[in-house]
Length: 158
Image (cartoon, rainbow, N blue to C red; front, side):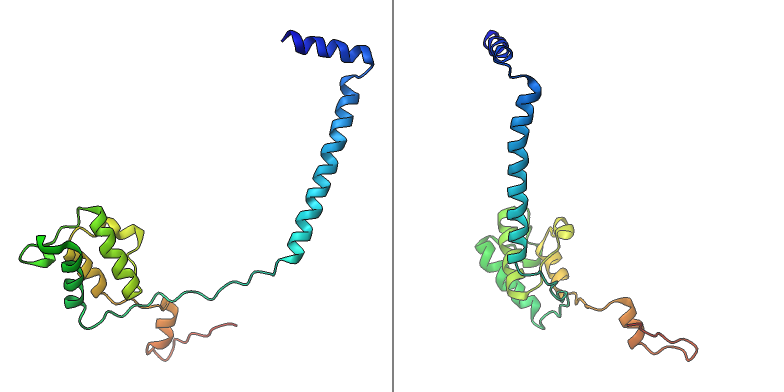
């Protein structure tokens, strides 16, 4: 604290006041900001423009043998400690649950959403999830494809 006070007093004796030192150091900061701004604009010109990718299809049709497929995966991951009815296998062990769901998501191309992970408590819950087909069509697309009454028509504006 005493050293700071001594430097201030010494600076005042040399004629360097706070306004002059701020102007000197402020000028350096402004020059640095200008150089950084030039570099950013130069980098932006070199980068290609980003193009929005097409929307990902979320449709899913379950395989016909989904039950036997899932049973083989459950037996493979959980080993010999399965109950007689494999669908009653509990998914309380998070490590095994992760391995099962990750393997199914990679092989079937259909992952359990985060919002539904807590619902997967047994192999039967997983079977129910993977047995349900998912359509990738909006309600408007379904209305257009449906047979509508003659007084109702849907026109798409493009």
